Length: 361
Image (cartoon, rainbow, N blue to C red; front, top):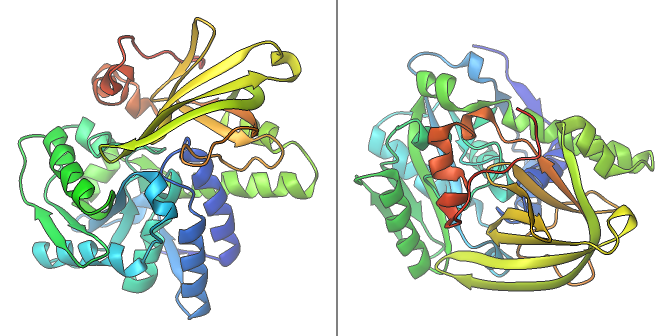
């Protein structure tokens, strides 16, 4: 048995901060999931982290995540038992005990969900994910980009309605069918996606995602203690680029078709005075521009943070008056290939232009 890394309550604080930043405005803020984990730890539960390098050839890993609109999560509190139900359904369906559980995306609340399952199921969390950030649709995953099936998928809502998407024509059809179920149950659905093998994880997952989020959150917390600029700390830790600083002057937001969609305008301060940054979002911030100049697009991470604390600001909470810093963090190379950009690039979101990045590659 390979050694597991214990996750302390202090690690959870750093993790919650880190996954918020990697959520690029979406995946909703993980504070409520953090409170759930705090309660589970108080009750005597613990969690551990497993490296992908320590998986055995016959191991299977569950992949869990919420599906829906971030705004709904503010009205419908997360329940650890809800996310555990599709996990158990998938385990019963495969007739296999999962070696570990991984997140469907390290960004936002989904970065904490596998820890809820791990605490209750008594298995470790895998230090990997298929996105390195948050995305709004299920097929926007390195596994699906690689051509791996996105079925079966087990889903459950808070009313104990459960279903299995047994087979689909394509990953996009899994998203379309799942989204319709999600809309019917109130835009909030717990899912367990197809279990992944050692080889699939070795070849197609982004390794070290959880450790990255903990490291990022810990650096920001330390910067606060030292009264240093947390934004500058994030830029240093993540090799990021500052795009803009300013005050939110306008927000247009709506929940439709199971997503939070909208647009925000930020008026510049400091060296950006007399400029305006515009940003679109579909659950996550997708593209940003100044005047007529496109600055950054998906799949790079477009992060809007509180300028003072470094706390992530979500698409469901961004509001007039927020003083923010806007950063770009580079996407994983797995997400920037020609094939990947067909699924996670600007055209996949309905735009008529190609991937634009401020990062040198």
